[in-house]
Length: 110
Image 1 (cartoon, rainbow, N blue to C red):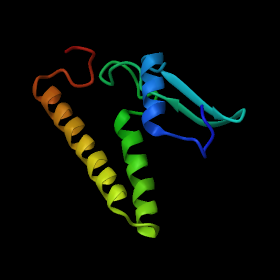
Image 2 (image 1 turned 45 degrees about the vertical axis):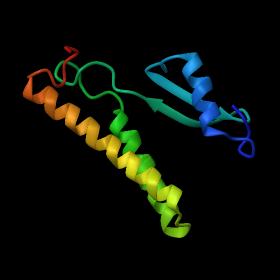
Image 3 (image 1 turned 30 degrees about the horizontal axis):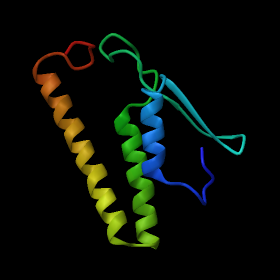
Image 4 (image 1 turned 90 degrees about the vertical axis):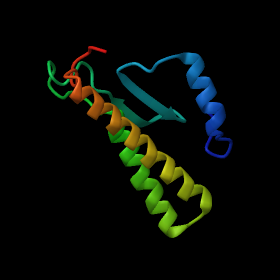
């Protein structure tokens, strides 16, 4: 990972895409120090107890943090990013509603 001064999110996304799908547990380090540890939910919640975070949890957390930055340092870019994060939650909520209507929510069925 690059240093904070050199950080480029688009570049980091490209590098991460080359690595492929993250494992069910993901750890990020900076200068040898662990700064992030994420355990994703594995298994459908209809058959498996809740054992990790959902993607929605991370989006909510990122939205709240960005909103706090935007209160202190408001700018158009932050506002657009917040809107896009909220939009992503709407799409995932729509997906959940569709899966519930089809009776497959919480399972690993398509």
